[in-house]
Length: 85
Image 1 (cartoon, one colour):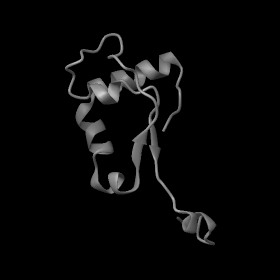
Image 2: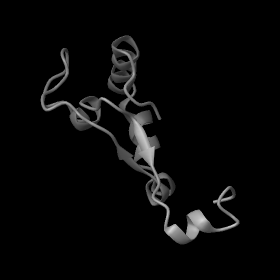
Image 3: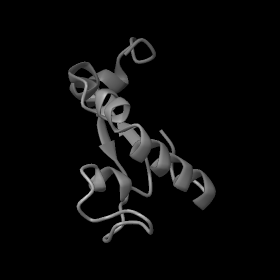
Image 4: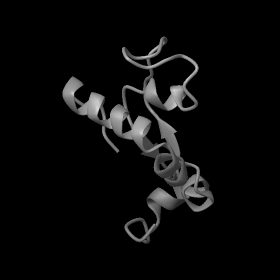
């Protein structure tokens, strides 16, 4: 993931999503990915400049951060197997 990328990098990410929607969807909507991770981070309230509000991936394009989070329990964190987990 990437947290608060500079505007040039953020625009490049958004352009890549726009130009490769199937690849992006395949990555983040993959069942194995979704079983472990959840996309997180802040998003814009309105569509970014250059993108229509009706874009099929508008919620993804509105992201300011592209972070995949995996929650861990206290038991997992305190386990001797944390690194493996």
